[in-house]
Structure formats: C-alpha cells, structure tokens
Amino acid sequence: MSWKNKLLIAHPNLPSHSIFSKSVIYLYEDNTRSGSVGVILNKKSEYTVNYLAESKGFFYPDHTRMLKLGGPVSEKTILMLHSDEWYSSNTMQVGGGLAVSSDDIMIEKLSMGNEPIQWTMCLGMCAWQPGQLAMEINAQFPYTIENSWLTCEADDTIVFGYDGESQWEKALELSSQQMIDSFF
Image 1 (cartoon, rainbow, N blue to C red):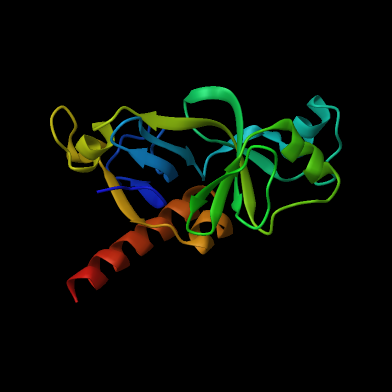
Image 2: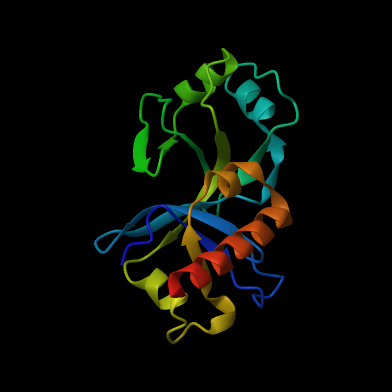
C-alpha cells in the first residue's frame, strides 16, 4: 500500500517531547525503493517568508506568513507544497491537485506577486527508509502504538486551511470519519 498523498497524524499518546507530537505530515513520496518523504504542516518556525525572501535578495510584502518546520531532515532545504496550477523551474507534480517546488525562482516569483492559489513553505522535511513507515503505522517492533501514525486522505481544507494544534485536531477528526465511513 502506498501512503503517497496521504496525511500522517501523530498518535494522541505520542509524548510531548517528540518533534512529531501533535503533528500533521503530508506525504508527497512513498515507494518501496527509496522510502517515504513528507513535510510537517502544522509547526511554525521562527522565520517569516518575508525574512527568507530578503535573505535571497527579494521582497515579499506579507510580514506575517510563517515558514513551517517541515521536519528534521535537511533542515536548510526550502520546500513549497502548493496547488498544482502553479509551477517553478523544478516543480514536481505529486498528485491530488498538489505539487512541490524547491528553488530560488519560486521565491522570486512570490516577490513579484506570482503565487499559487494555495501554498505553504517549509524548512526541512521528514523521511523514512523503505519499509520503516509501514512498520511505524502498524506499530510493528520496535515501534509501539504510541509512536505509530493515524492516516487519512489529504484534504485541501486540512492541508491549507488550518495551522498548529487545530490542524492536528481537524486531521484527527477527518481520520476518524474516514475510518468510520470505510466500515459502512
């Protein structure tokens, strides 16, 4: 089974000291050869998109839009998860109406007012070795139920419409509803 284009939702019993506590992760890659890759959607960094743009020599007028902490892997990598009508020089279509971009041209385009309809920008990403994510989801040794993941179909409202703990709560609700719906 592939979890590409799905949301991973942290188990409610995951200890609060974990970086993944109350996190919602969008998986944009999942295959048996190279493993799984995604970004945490609901953890804010201390930096604004404006700060990032200025560090690259551009100006982005919104001083409130925050960069997200996408995960503990390649923490200096900048990724934008966005609606797929927009593109940059290295945009990868990931399905489900979404795409991922990661280049300086995307920042230049944002500074000129050329933005996707929906987007979020992340520092870093999450990655799993082949088979590791399946073991975590299924709570197979050495993983336990507390550090397993709930899953659900990605929903634009959850992906782009919420932030922080409310995004996690909405994702939990969606996961529960999708699980119930699968039984009826």
